Length: 114
Length: 112
Image (cartoon, rainbow over all chains, first blue to last red; front, side, top):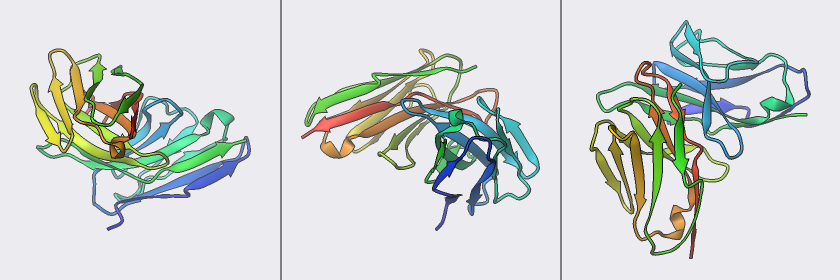
């Protein structure tokens, strides 16, 4: 019963490096999203996807790219890491129902940019 | 853009006491969610509130929604130490079914 799986859990990057945070879900959910969580703040939406081949920007998209080639996978790419991108990143998937969306979060990825 | 404000941001209380966390939001929405987060962990869904006047209860926690006042409350009854965590409310955007906006969280510390 994997749910939403994120890798890596911890990563240290140097300024200017690029990397990809992986996210996979095995629940056949249509919707997937990436959030970042900074100290003392709630989660802020980076990018989201409503299905394979469809992505859109959230509140804080700058410096990040996403793609959704399959229903299961939604990787987040940092193009040129900056210290301001030091944060905890959560991937989430959800489905819509008459009971509202139920959002399932991954375990989080702790990223430090030095 | 939808804004979500929670208060208080920090709450320290004694076991056995009652308290309420408030979640205000700025524009119309009929979807309100409450989550719990333990330190270093992911978010755990507590409640989903979908209509005006909705009330849900689970153990010592009770959540309610007033869409006219754009206000949700999370009431804690007879707090116990195990409830210590950070609680977030999240509001679904009415114009986009897949966008959610989170409050800053309320860090609750229940002292034994």
